[in-house]
Length: 352
Image (cartoon, rainbow, N blue to C red; front, side):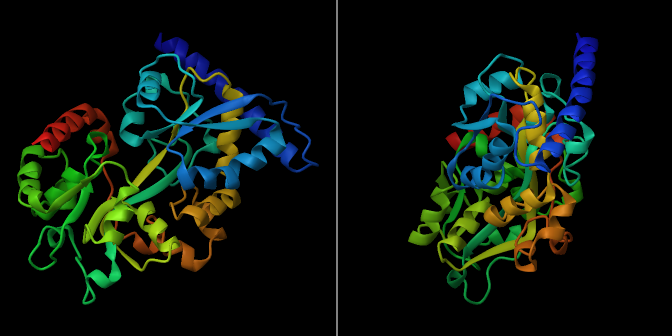
């Protein structure tokens, strides 16, 4: 079976190079779909403003150029998890974490090298279509701490120096960096985080459990901060961006924040592989990716994107070169291999 998969992947890689080359030729012309592609790609993600930004930065012009429509649908756990496990399903591409992706590479298509994001971890590059980098950081409305807020995760746990409730991930599958944050606050050095000591992390989390307000979906964080129901939040940095776009003065603490690669898995069961590979190349184009980055402030995965960004945009990106010395990164391989244990543990901890 493994040899069959390798043969199929090798064949697809050769085909992909032809498709992407043809697409590039079509882009240089009058807009007539010169790639020979057609049909549609079923794209599953979490919707909202980020999907709208993808539509504007990537999908609309891709359809105009190739004739391929990218149809966005809300992602459903049962479908994408089944496809990760090798089942048939309706998605051609779907959002997937690094850990989920690396745990199921045997059921994914490898992308050709010329459409891979060079800022992704090497082990992820073959498997992520439309990759991006988001941050997990603590943040607050600036006037909450007019003299300066928490500087480290240890400060986050110091409720006397920095009073107020903390917005914290409350959905089992969104445990994010919860264990890493707790261990850093408990004095573990970043280089010693893995393997994660879950028991120690949960003991540290228990010390502020009464000060946590749990959110079930990321957008809830915006309401918690604006209403004053939470003084500080731990969440994906895109939620702080949304608040800034709404006119709020928000402070993001980049020190000890996590730069997290994310993207879209390309399952073996995809119905139109040539079209998906062409879309992967389209989305890795630095100018198009710069357009998406400016709209969302998610970090790019193509290093050339920084050549197309204004300085004031680049400085607010989690993987901006100026944040390099402050950022932390997960051990995606370890997390992938231990994903189910992490999910089970966090589910149990939330249940109390």
